[in-house]
Image (cartoon, rainbow, N blue to C red):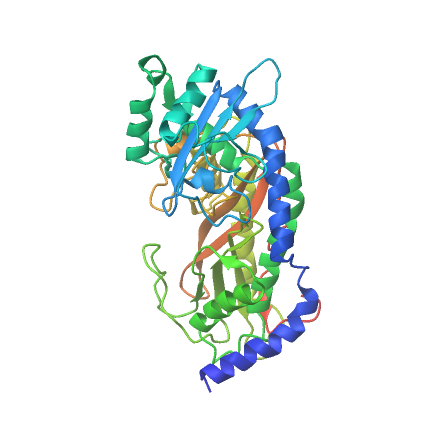
Length: 444
């Protein structure tokens, strides 16, 4: 009964039912056009602001095909799947309220943003032309994507960095500085236009989980957690979207089973009545990512709702989320959010573990780290980065609860994506306030 054919039939039968509840999915062409509009807007609004606030008047990015800088990849037009040959981009702020210059030291324009600034007929050497572009403008600070602690801001290769210093005159090499903060702020800052769409991206992710945690996919006593994992992967592909990590689906139940460790994946289990199901799942859509953990209860015969003790445990997890999001304030560091939340939560009798992170262009995005599962006392350097307005986060955490009914601890693992606008925190598409039920009950 647990054959691949049965699982395929489950997927096909549910797809027809679920389509009507799924928000509209943009075509690839529509997504590309949308992302290109966002890119132009970001260079008109985000880049001038962050360059001026960080005191940088020139930003130089150098990368090449198959070894792309994470920042440059987010600046390429939607029809480019990566860099071409050696790609050199220059952003220069002339000051005095003038618009930015956005130049490509390349044989062609790089999309609509970066204009061609190299004629090989006049200057055959691309590196020398880059040096000319820099020398002609004589910037005060030349930022490059180089960082010791933030991987997403460390995109320039060792060779490219050394070569840049070789071709620049001595009076300019001393002006080369790390663009770490510039890179992070570019990646973490979300625009109003992006946030309008991000809500629906999150709605799509929520709907896929809702489908997976239903009787249309799960037959208790037959379906395994691993089959639900692959349902999630297949459903994402069917919708024309991407997954940025392999999902997790696991169970907790009233037996002597130990809580699985974060250093490894849970094993495959046959889902049974009375199980508490949990998933960790994320999609990539329109260049933005989601990261979500939600929970479901598998009803026993005669039950119409989850046991009160599991409902109460889930509510305590939600309370922990409220404490963390209530701590948000512009300028607070990730470590301050972490430690303040843990202190308040423990004073309320909670048993918290917090490992929240920024989200956006990347699933584990640029910005302040708010705990790691194995670093609950604070995270050096990455946890010391401050919160800025107009940034998005995955509120990811868990709270342990001892259940006398099961004579063991359970871990209520939750994760929902939200947005800090500088004054308040809100979830992109709400959060799971109640456990899903399998099978779904009327009105649930």
